Amino acid sequence: MIAVKIEKLGESIALVLSDEAQAALQSGVGDTLYIDNSTGEIVLSKHPRSADERRERARAFRERYRQTFEALAK
Image (cartoon, rainbow, N blue to C red; front, side, top):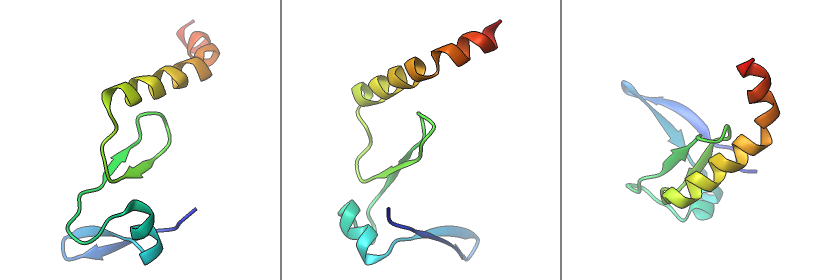
């Protein structure tokens, strides 16, 4: 697991990546990174997930918590 730091930069905030994090993401200054939290976990990646990947992860999430959802629906 690689830690990142959030810092205030003027009126914005910035996510500060170490050299190790940049290498893992294969990213650098000016690159766009994507945050996906559609399944309850936060994923930072260089490329957006495909629609098929998102659907599969959502299906797995629904299956994992099916009993909970059914109990809440009563």
